[in-house]
Image (cartoon, rainbow, N blue to C red):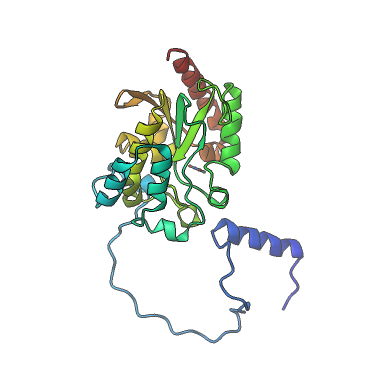
Length: 264
Ligand code: URA
C-alpha cells in the first residue's frame, strides 16, 4: 500500500468526524479494500419521505402526533421541570443518538431570548447551546452590543435555547416532523422564561416559531411577534461564517435589537 502522509490521515479523520462519524464501533479495524464482497440487501419498497429538512419545505409545519410532548410541556411549571420533562421525553428518535439533552444557557431572567436550530457536535458534547464556532461568533456579536450570556443584569443578558434539544445526525437540518413534535416544549420554554424580545436565528427557528414558509433571507430584520412578544429574525451565525459579507446585515439587525431594548 502506498504510504500516506500523517497529515493526510489526520485530515481524513477530521473530515469523518465532521460528517458525524465520531465514535469507533468496532475494536478491530476493517480493511474494506480486501474484504470479500458482501451480498447487497434486497431493495426496500419505496418509503414515503417523512424527514424533509425544513430548509427545503415550502409550506409551514403542520400537525403531527405531538400529544405526548404537549401534555408534558403543559405540566411543567418551572424551567427546571421543563428541562426534566424534555429529558424524560422518548418520542423523538434524535435522543437515542445524542450524548446530551441541550436545554439552555445564559440568564433565564434576560430580556432577550435567542432561539437557534439544534445542537451541533460541540454542543452535544458539552450539553450547552452555541458553544462551537457559530456560538463563538454569536458571543462576539453580542459583545459588540454590550450584551452577553453571562451578564447578571437582565437588560444586558441573553438566554439561549434551540428548537431541538438533541443533535441531528451529521448536523443535518431539523426535519419538519421533529420541529413540530418539539414545538410544544419550545412554546412552554418561552412562556416560562417570559422574555421581552425573542431573536430567532436562521430558518428552522424562524419558520417553527412564526409558522411561516418564508425564508430567513427575506424575513431577517423585519420585526414579527409571538403573542405580544416582539420577534426579530436574524441570519444564523453559521450562515455568517459561510458568507461573511452578510455580517453587514447582521450588524444592522443587532443595532435594531439594541434600539428596541431601549424602549422596554
Ligand atoms: N447552531 C444552533 O442553531 N444551535 C446551537 O446550539 C449550535 C449551533
